[in-house]
Length: 359
Image (cartoon, helix red, strand yellow):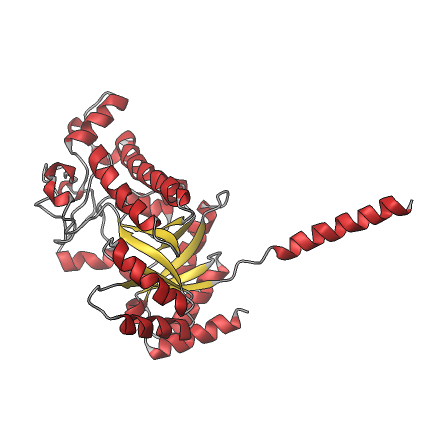
């Protein structure tokens, strides 16, 4: 009887030991920041040290999709104890020298105007078509070049959507707009490639639709076009042993409505919903509401949420702390601040104190 009893004890110990190795997810703090190749290494070291000393764990760096600059910055950030994510403007590619040689790669509005030369809202809105083979492959190639860089945690997609069919409510006065309905100059993409692909599936032309705003097949076609790019990017990132993450609109139904983005259906490791409450004329408690909604929509998926906080929209340090706690209480695994340069010494002090209180 002694031998089976000994085996049982060994088995129990083994199970207990394995269980102990599983570390709980630590709530993490990140910042978005934009790089400048002209900036000296010493300046970057100072910036990264400031973040680390201020309680930040990770940096999402926009290098304008330059792998060489990213390779330069990764060891500098890593040395200061920060994890690095490669932030890329995906479907919106302002000033992309390769794409600009191909006018047919760009999205076309319902009015028939191309983002190549007629840009909605702002001049840097130069959106590539997610359906056209060449433009898709261009974006995915850029993703792969970043994914190849040693030491990064993820390729971090931004602007992985269509142009805003509806702007956040607080931005409308800036453009002297009323958007009670879908306006044709902001409705994309009606390029020949999209129309042809849609007709092949549904045997109808969206340009001839009585009301495209309630044509669910046409809406889903565009949601699926973005999803296909994300899913391909996910496969590429994982091929290089990196994760795929993305900055997205506040929660899936809202993202669907505003920018044709349904991120709860994507193959993706983590999302960073930009819960910028001030953009929507909401109070700070909306950070908790939107976080909770996103977490609920991802209930049966492995995808995790990091709540994005817009620093200029936070009135004071008390609100900053409240936003962090609301994100955690409602299921986020971390928060990310836009952007690193907007954080004051007082903000960093609040972040550190709040972080210490969570342990």
